[in-house]
Image (cartoon, rainbow, N blue to C red; front, side):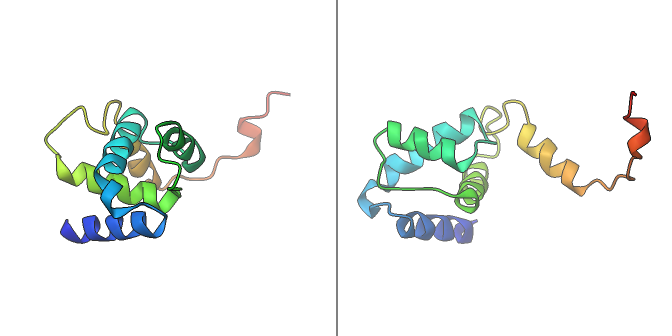
Length: 109
């Protein structure tokens, strides 16, 4: 998992994070993502800005790296990133192949 950590840190710096500020930014991202693992980048950026981290702007890929990194850091901690297990459920749903439904099944008219 050191590779994920290295890529994550490099991307944070590319996105504007000052290397000396990384511990605080990581703590803020951890709290944001533990509260809502499915947060969209715009909302995450708004929260980061509110917390004083105006110099960094995250995108979808950076948030996914952050989730992978934080989940790998402490996989035994049940309260981290799986409060309602919604992220893992969403990932499993993507893997399920379903048959297409016909429109008439949903048409109530």
